[in-house]
Image (cartoon, rainbow, N blue to C red; front, side, top):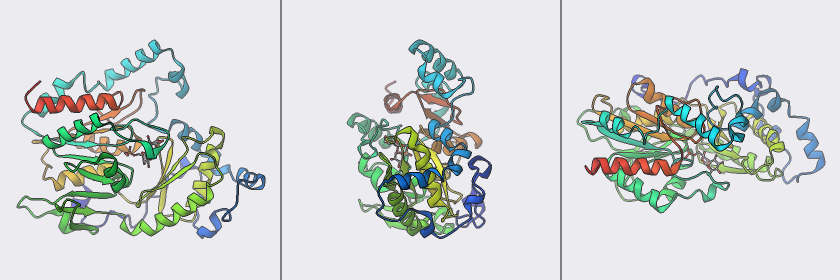
Length: 393
Ligand SMILES: O=P(O)(O)OC[C@H]1O[C@H](O[C@H]2O[C@H](CO)[C@@H](O)[C@H](O)[C@H]2O)[C@H](O)[C@@H](O)[C@@H]1O
């Protein structure tokens, strides 16, 4: 992986250009001062302001943003003719459609024996996404709590296998939601990792080679490595967060979150007719910040540093820190529901080790190997793993 071959910062020296064809906003990406980007402070949602925004919607409209915002998760499989068709199907047809999709991405529950068969003699390592995987998707991100039964299931597996949660949320927040000390946490899509200190005799690539990786102690006094590859972006994200809050203030239902190394702009509770306005506000703000990029999540636009780092890299980093890089002896499993989890699925698929499992009740294109319908099936799968390990299957 990159941090082995290139012992340097994952910050790109020559930032990857935005996918200009997809965004269709090449000309508008020329950097200019943040003060030019927004609307004057304290302005309310006046008609004049709305007109001003509407006259500025070209970037968002021309670029297919709206389509991406509508799908807001990995695209549906092509055999589902359009996005709405599967949603309006009667339950039986919907189920038939799902069953046919599971021929390609079998349910991890129905092929459980096969999965643990391939884990025999290997060290299993678990990587879990949070929202939509351990907790159901809800309208208010501040209330996305996991159930106590899910917490118990996660605790059980974390006591049996090395386990980490890799979330788009900031690390402290996801720790507050999960509340377990038996596992490792990576926040901000893997840009903020509190991981183990490598104990093997071989020198640790992680500690020796990576800038922004420091030895410290966690809240329980345990020695850990704190790796924050996008550290230099903290003030920029703070600035952008303030601007996003100010500029989206008049759009009913918008919620902006500061996750320290990235920011999220939620539109789940915004009227669909205003989604393009949300997109345009974000595009306008980002015009002043060419070192940041926008990605799509579930009814959320994520603003992230343009660095060569993602959840897939975080999985590789953690496997290395845990001394679990030998694919002959290690079987990593990553469970997630969102586009950002695809980076992790891809890493496992391409390196031919372990399995990605997509949590979805709808057929979707994915790099995962297996599927689980929803967080309750995730919990069932975790319980099965614990029973299997304890020899009670
Ligand atoms: O990587 P994750 O742990 O899955 O985090 C991804 C984003 O999750 C949260 O937003 C999502 O869940 C919310 C609560 O269910 C939902 O309201 C929202 O529409 C979803 O996008 C979180 O608030 C984001 O900051 C994370 O990036």
